[in-house]
Image (tube, rainbow, N blue to C red):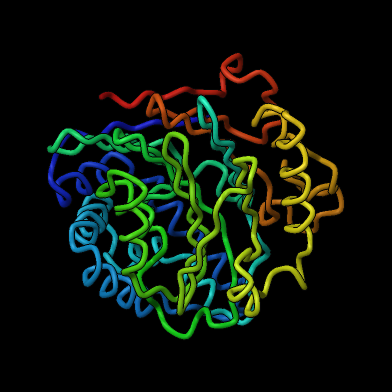
Length: 355
C-alpha cells in the first residue's frame, strides 16, 4: 500500500512537529525495527542514544534547519530526539558495525525528450509498511516530493525546480570511523535547496560523511552521480548514449579501490550490466527494471524460497520513476514486475508537484 502525506507550509520545527504527531505510531514502529536490525547485526545491544546524539550534532552543523525538523518529529512522536536522529543516520550506524550489509537498489537515467529516471528501492521486508510519499510545500513556494521511511527526512525525490534525486547504497573501506553528516540528510537538503545541477553538485562537495552512498542528480537533458564517501565525493557522468546506471559498487576507479561490496555481493555487477544492456536496447525504464536475469537478487529483487529469515531478507519494496520535465514522480508498491503497465494498478500513484 502506498501512503501519502502532504505537510502544511511551515517552518522546519513546525513541519516536523506536525509530521511526528500525525505519524507517531509508524515512526515508533520504524525506530523499533531499526533497534532489532542493529542489535541483530552487531550481536549485541547497539547504543542508539550515543550514536543518535553524534548524528544530531553532525546534522546541526551542516543542516541546522533539518536538525530542527528532526527535533519537531521527535517531539510530535513523543520520542527522544536521539532516536529520530539515529534512524536518519541508519546508513552511518550500519557502517560502524562489523559486517556491512549487502547492497541495495538499482538506479538509472536515460537522457532524452523527456529524460526518464527510475530506481528500485530494495530493503528488508520488515520495513515494507514503514514508508510513504511525503510532499513538503515550503513557505518559499518550492515543493519537494520524497519517497522515504517514517521519521527519516528524505531519500529519493524530485522538487519543483525540476531537479530529481536517486539514491543507492555503497560501502567503502573508510566508512564507519565516526558518525558524520547522515546521507539521508544530505539528500533532503539537496531537494530543499538546490535549483539546478550546478548548485546541487556544489552542495554535495560540502558535507563530511562517514558512510558511502551514490546520489544521482537529474535535470531535463542532464544527469550526474556523486559517489559520496569519506574523502570524496567522486563523480560519474552518463555514457555517450546518455545512459547512466548505478547499483551498489563504485564506478569511479579511484574510489573503487576501497569498495567493499563486489567481492561479497557480486550481484551488484550483474544488476548494473542487465539494466545497462536493456536500456541500451531501447526498453522502457519500467520494463528494463523488471529484470530477473540474476535470480532472486536481480534488479527486481525477491525473497528467495530458501530464506531463513524472510522478514529480514532484502526485496524490492517500491519502484519509483521520476519525470523531471513535469516535476512529478510515479511510485509503485513492490517490484516493477508486479506493475508492468504503470498507472493501471491500484498500488501505483503518480504524484504531481505544483508549480
